[in-house]
Length: 66
Image (cartoon, rainbow, N blue to C red; front, side):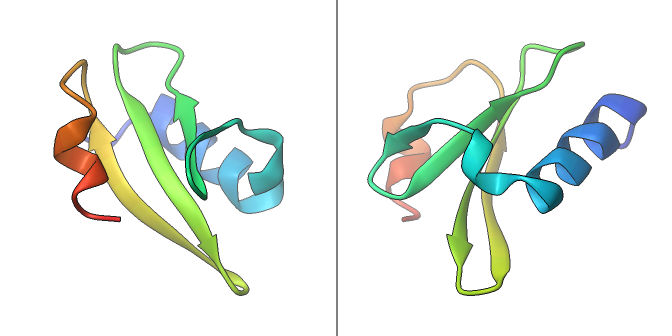
């Protein structure tokens, strides 16, 4: 799923990852503006680890990946 909303969200995560709320442990979330999707990620040193790009689903599914 490649679109401008995704690219803008990834750029915002890259530039200011700590501006997004912590939602589970060290996992942060950014909600995409045009779609009912969210990017779940965490900082790992100087890198960003994207855990999931999910729609409205049970959060227990992606929490198993952390």
